[in-house]
Image 1 (cartoon, rainbow, N blue to C red):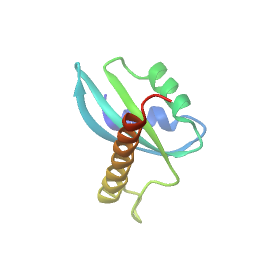
Image 2: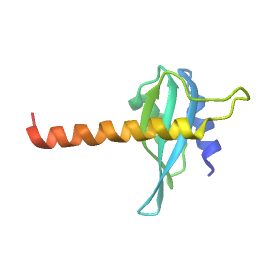
Image 3: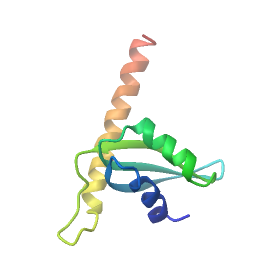
Image 4: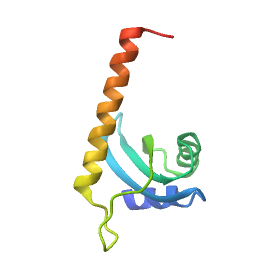
Length: 106
């Protein structure tokens, strides 16, 4: 299953306006993706949709809700801008993990 097919499954959700995938690698023979979604669907709803409609070898590791996806005048994803959003998201995740580790379980 190609990333475009996975995006189309996610895009069918009525509260999704746009979606772009970033492949994260593979784990235990499964391809891992991070999905950037423009819309009002919750990550939990999108996880349920992906679990119900995608093949077992395809998984989405996480969803990140954004206001809009970076696109050019022709509608193509601006890869560098998406990579910057991805870098910032990863930094926030790292900071959260370190903060949580410092404080311990609440």
